Length: 285
Image (cartoon, rainbow, N blue to C red; front, side, top):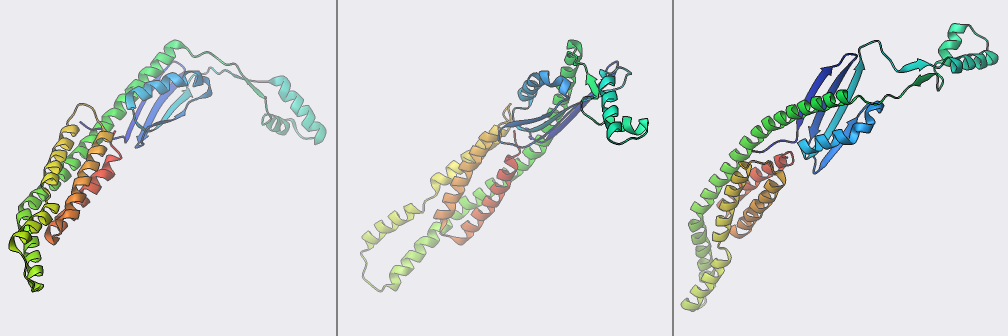
């Protein structure tokens, strides 16, 4: 079963004095790229949170946000009264003004607030990890639902290529007959004596160069393998991409050997279906 790399997950929890929200968004990427927005006080735990995300999401461009909203009356920030008074004195010496205006200006200056760094409570961090796990489950559910849509689209297009291949197989005898007829007509137009046995040998050699039996068999096998890989337990977009390349190689070879307009039209249609598959494969995990 395949998964998309596009997803969204969110979870919030209410503690005694704060509300914590974990949010995840992901898009397609060749590798795992995590962009984390974490409050300064929680930075020491960033590597642990990144590993938890990496283990669950594997690939994709991931935006991770940890948002903390203080809901209680407690605060670790205090006004540095001595620094504020010193700023007010200096400002008043430069340009006199009322105390309210001076206080407003002073509070904009550096170091007017002092914050005592608190160690992260381990129970709180465990709850944050649990919230992250819930958000990861949500985003993986989202990815799986998107993957089902992609899988249906892929299977429809694989089926379309298989139908076109069946038409190619049906037209192949007609194609070889047409090539043989053109060659015989060209020799007849030369109005020259031709050894019949030698001509037949050369004709067989020439037709063998346009034989697509192996390409038809390999293409059918690759199409079946693509379907089997989609049904595997793990989503493997890279492997599906490699199989799609092999499908394209066989289609191109058939097109180059066709030398027959009705078959080349079928090849163009197969290429169109395959290109749409390749575009969507960029979003598969």
